[in-house]
Image (cartoon, rainbow, N blue to C red; front, side, top):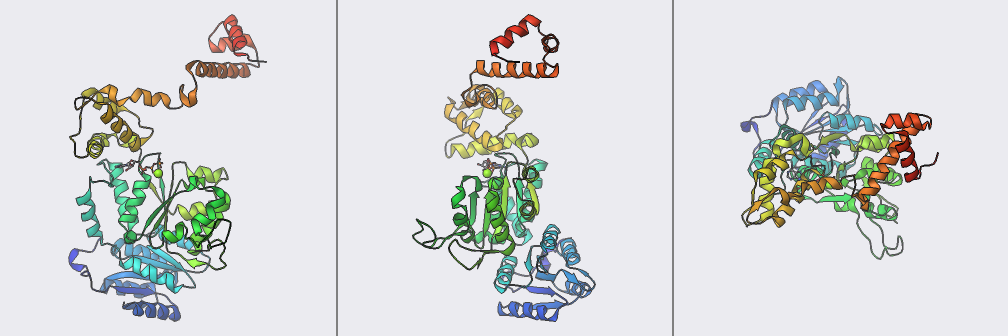
Length: 458
Ligand SMILES: Nc1ncnc2c1ncn2[C@@H]1O[C@H](COP(=O)(O)OP(=O)(O)OP(=O)(O)O)[C@@H](O)[C@H]1O
Ligand SMILES: [Mg+2]
């Protein structure tokens, strides 16, 4: 159930906050902090009391403790999610109970604070929560700007699901892990989450984790102090400080070296970072969105990615569908991308064969590959018509893995394959050439000739 328009507090009017905690001291601290920010609060000590308040009032934010005398903070998170979807809930967790925080975020909490509550963090959380666009506004914005640059193009069920998920994720501070094949729109999705969130006024900072030299990682991420190392001739901010108040996008996160993973985990958990060369830590308020085209779980299983960091980053997963899974979107993508490529000039027409080939192609490089194909076709085509040849699709797929890859000639490639098959057959038959020849479907003489030609030694 969602709140109807008439129940909404008009913009500009200060929202009320519901505080739920069984400790009177904490209730007072929160109430006081809110009052200093010009906000009024209702305080409840139990789940039952909180329910009563929720029935009577509409709240701009709910802050709840995790452990309550008659239930859990999670009960409140779920209740609000089901019945008062407009209200963001943040939970306050006991020191060192990271699992609790993750559970709350998964259940739909907007954010969490660890005890003892740091006032600066509390204030920025409150500001973010109250700054959230209303759900209604969001869908209107999405509908009117759809189809424009920077939007997800497509009407297929899988892209509709992704779009809906992005809208939900924008209303949360939970870390998001975006998975999907290369070129499937992971970075685009990360930007959309940021743009639709309360953080949209602050920077979106994308970082390609695979592109930073290992010895510079710490200073690039956390900044440094003048004189911290040779070449550090002034104080510098890192990615975390640059993204303060906004979103830090960790692209190709699986490429982070293990030593850096530990430091990153700490920064995310503590919401604090220490510049290289400084003794003290500074609070930072960044939302972490990460992505890889690899399977992060496999990296964990192989021991290349820390499990604790994995759980921290992958609180909520957003899967970007491959273009193969949403082939019905291809015509719309072609039309929109061509219009974008051609700018103010009229886009070319596509021949029936070209259109058919584009519809049947497998797109290992997804939307980016389709973009490249269309750009090339636009450059190559004559007379305002794209023909099958202009697409150069065959050339594209031959490069994938097979001959022509890494400068390998066709002969080299064939020899490599032949050698491999013969070795396998010999291994299977205990180096019995007669049996191996039978297995390969060639004569004994032919096999002996090939073994000599390829220089295979027994
Ligand atoms: N659904 C979509 N609608 C419109 N454009 C899209 C869509 N998906 C991807 N694109 C475009 O395709 C290109 C590649 O997208 P993006 O960089 O987000 O992919 P990625 O998943 O991050 O790729 P990689 O794994 O290679 O980093 C971009 O130009 C992006 O704008
Ligand atoms: Mg990318």
